Amino acid sequence: MAAKVELELASMVMGPWDNPHVYTLYEGYVLNERHIFIIDEGNIWLRSVHKAPYLDHLYLDGDSGGLIIADEVEGMDARVQIETIITALTQVNGLQFLLDIIMCTKDLGDINLKLDRLQ
Image 1: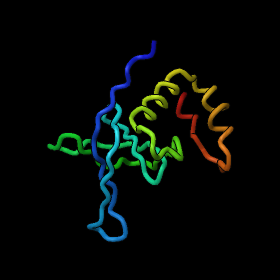
Image 2: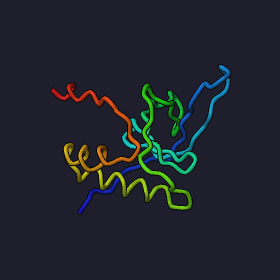
Image 3: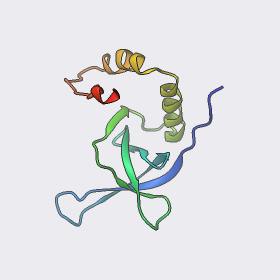
Image 4: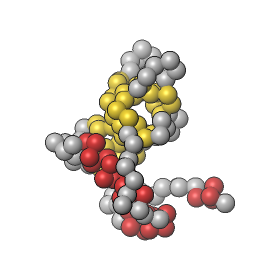
């Protein structure tokens, strides 16, 4: 039986955008205080985050880009969808993930995963 996924309902601040004072606030689910799953325009995004000091349930966008991990999810229970994805990913080994998920993603351009860091 798979372990229960522990997610924290929280908000994430992204920005600044075109003006130094313009930010966007997203609601999502944080995993291990380091990653957040948000829904934006029907896509589930995974982003790295940093905990905002002195504020509960508020995170700041991290130092990397985001990944769309599911699309066309509007109307679904986001938490259930995210828990299902996390559970499925925890049951896949790295090579299987690369071959079955990454390599089979349509319209994927060349990417550099820099897997030499695994050594």
